[in-house]
Length: 143
Image 1 (cartoon, one colour):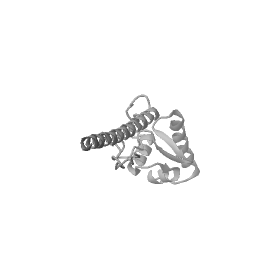
Image 2 (spheres, one colour):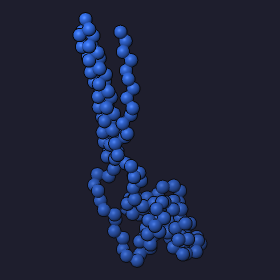
Image 3 (tube, helix red, strand yellow):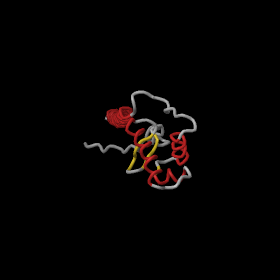
Image 4 (cartoon, helix red, strand yellow):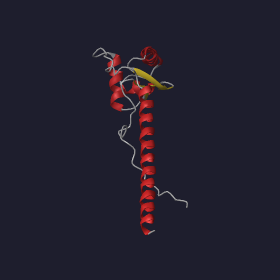
């Protein structure tokens, strides 16, 4: 009978290994599904950054936002350009940004009067890393 118990222990141990492997497979499948969902949200083509005419106001605004590394409010953009924040300057810059925003080129509107760049994506540095393996919990066996 002792040999029978040894075999039963080996079988139970193997069943626990199978359950742990199934959990790892389920975790990997969830990871794949999350990555697939993320791909669906990306543009179909990996277009390069839109070109702008060198020396233009569009290039200057783009450089200001790019150097800030975050979307900027209209007044911050005008201030960074070294211009007076008078209504005419605001209207000119807002009109320029609005035109490019509606076309989906160069700039994107992130909040009222706040603009970012379409070429800058908000992907965290650890994006794409597989999640850390979870500690497997022993499965209680009922007899």
